[in-house]
Length: 170
Length: 302
Image (tube, rainbow over all chains, first blue to last red; front, side):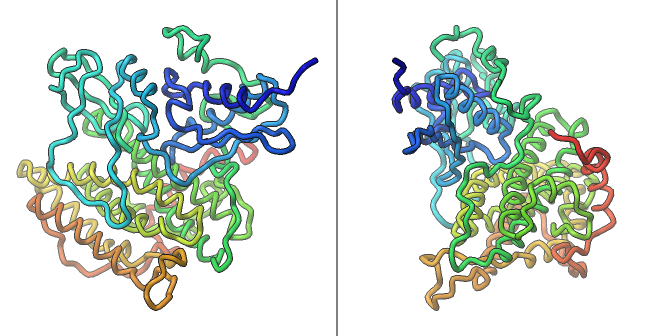
């Protein structure tokens, strides 16, 4: 006798889907998977939140989650997009941060606090220090605020001379 | 993923999807960025008004993204090229969400591609500053500083819009636009307070942008705010504090330019407005390039 796959299984399967652009992280590590639940008719409803507005990986994530849930035996799958509240790098889990560092990517610091009202302009202030993910030195410099993906900036370590990427605070 | 070895994390991406979707390569087949979002319009919100805001801000973003993309292979340094492409990608993402919302509320049921690829210049509602060709990197910096400062100030207020989709798109955009404005401000300082030549080019760029500034600052479309954000008079309209966006933008520009040793030239505003479909001759060729594939192959999918 085959038993219906459970909500627990659905959550585990969805949580283990890798991010298309940072595949060392799962969507759960990244905080992109907001919710998984079973509707009364047995449909698995998974809610995802986009990282950046222009992130081309969103469609991949939707398709990956749906395909893996179907592969795990869930016949009816529905993917929802959640825009509110917006994704923030603060949602990246402690495990996700450790994994990023292991892969040579400096994890984000705390995201800037967003309070209602004007976003203050900061001119010429020193940037947040980012530790080198390879040697741990704090003697690093930003070479570009933007990088190969929307979510990362480019850095260089003055101690070990290696370039590295940093997930920007958002 | 538990069954992948650490060295092969990218392999899982090559796994086929046998769920009959239409994607033929990474990033394709993704029309409808509002997939699975509750798209109903709350009571008391005028759909036509929401559509007008979405169209104007979507057009600003699409046209700006196209100009930014044109810096690819032409930027002064590779890092700047990557930065400008990333900023353009953020704006393109905002445009897609805004167009998708527009199609839901303007009664046409159109998808994002219909807005981007099948309209003529006179149907676009972007400000003219967005469509001017880049004459110099300094011009790119000044234009981006003006447009990102204004859009950031506006999005901060749009996040309180009564339409929940518009509010969510704006709230998301705020964090992105803060990076765009910072990038433009950093370069404005570096060039304005740099060499004689870079200072001269910034002054020339400011002179070029200044006649279009009023259109940006005054072209703010009205929108309803959430009831709990209504003013003391109970007026749940944004039009009452439209000046706040203008003031904040001018305040930011003033701070950056004064730190960079530059001034905003006082020049008369150019008559006309892109918000009414009155454009410069530069928009039509930009759209011809942007729309060429879609118009040549109307049945194509991507």
